[in-house]
Image (cartoon, rainbow, N blue to C red):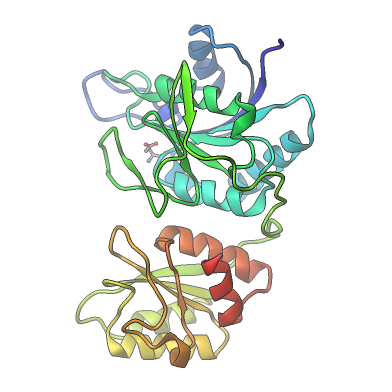
Length: 327
Ligand code: GLU
């Protein structure tokens, strides 16, 4: 049997971090070339053929449109290439949820596409990157990994990109997943899926945009007024995600200003600044009357990505936006 051929798209992040004193905390994300990472991995003797392609060498706080375009193009080519069995994207953990979800929304769910990161730089004591990378190879090499959408491999778990979020700044076990739990448990030598693939053969949910519109996240705070909403409209926001209190709440004046945005054709989605949970329609906020959309299970960062994709594809009507968030 020939070893699976895996395209490895490097973007940087802590998994490629270097320059740390082994016991210190300072380092430079993306300091290590992708080839060096792959050499380290090859020394582990994994049964896979890894083909490197460097997209960027950055901290993922600088991830944006040019890198997303390049990643999407490379993944699209790999999905169409019969010689490629799967794709791994090495990525900083800060914005892995944004990149993973954008790719999940805009790529077909055929072959496995796996994001992987690390919480400790490659030369730090107790570095987790090689373990996570070896786990990602195990996942991307498994034919049963197709049809599950884009995934994130961290801490011996496989998470759906749609569900995963970074919930701790430095803990090694930094990611949580909601509303579903992990899709699988993985080690370099074992992989146990908890359910069958749910998107077998599915095409891309949305076309990849030709540009990303400005969609802003507005965090609600007690005692705030409506001026920040006016400021966002003033800089040309084409969509607003409210990171609201509790189940997506905000002071009355803010909700009134957001309703005016919605009425003027700028869609408004209510998410929660609370770490986890569903934001439902018409609980304390009368979404039907105000023309607002409830983010349901998506937190603010992912709600912003979905709203950008929707607006870019001309979907701005509150009912259609709500249907996308319900889906
Ligand atoms: N801020 C950097 C990034 O997201 C480092 C954090 C990490 O990768 O864990 O790329």
